[in-house]
Every structure is written in structure tokens, then in C-alpha cells.
Image 1 (cartoon, rainbow, N blue to C red):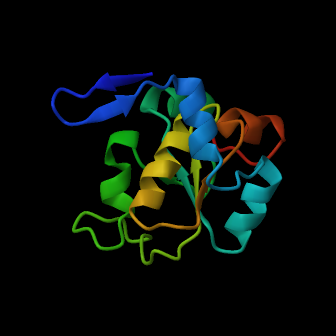
Image 2: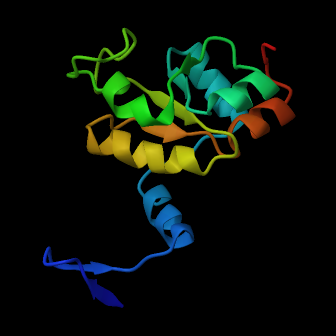
Length: 137
């Protein structure tokens, strides 16, 4: 069903579950072991969990911590506020949230910036930890 966009054209109503399906159809997600292997080959793991979750559950060693509201500014290779690791649009980025939902939306945003190798971790940090991969407390 289409609805008026306040004079800006018509927009389709879509729920978050459908939005996630649509976003994820545009790229391949990775599991914990694939993410670890990608990091070993030079991919950048990016943890977007908020501070309370990082404090409670720990960190993935070597992951770049970027709050979700800063992600695009920190990873845009052309941006004035980019992280030192954001060197190229060809950089492979694996975004990690707590359970693998917010990261999918973040990947969509990064891909719109031209980071065509951006993906996310299916199951998020919780899947990483459940797989027995390294966590620093």
C-alpha cells in the first residue's frame, strides 16, 4: 500500500522484517568463522554495539569500535572524519552488532557510500562468542 510522503511523492509502507529481507538480498552475510577468516586476510571487523553491551560481553580483539551513529562518518574513505582504517571503497568490512539485525541496516548504508564489500555477521557478537572465537573481557 502506498501512502503520501507529505508532498514528497509516494512511499511504500514496509515493516522492519520485510526491510531486512530486502536489504540482505543485496549481499552475502558471513558466519563467525568466515568473519574471523576474513579478518585474518585483512578485512576490517567493525563493532557497532553500544557501550553497555561491550562492557557486559567484551570485545572482539582487533575490531574497530564505532558507535552506530558515527559509522558512516568514520568509514567513508572520502570523509574528513574517517577512521585511519577507512582507506578505500574496496575495503572489506564486516559489521557486527549484538545479534545481527542493526548491522544489516548499517551495511545497507555503507554500501550506499560505495563500500561495495561491506557485509555483516549473521547472529552478531552473540554468534561470535557462541562459536568460541576470541573475546577480550
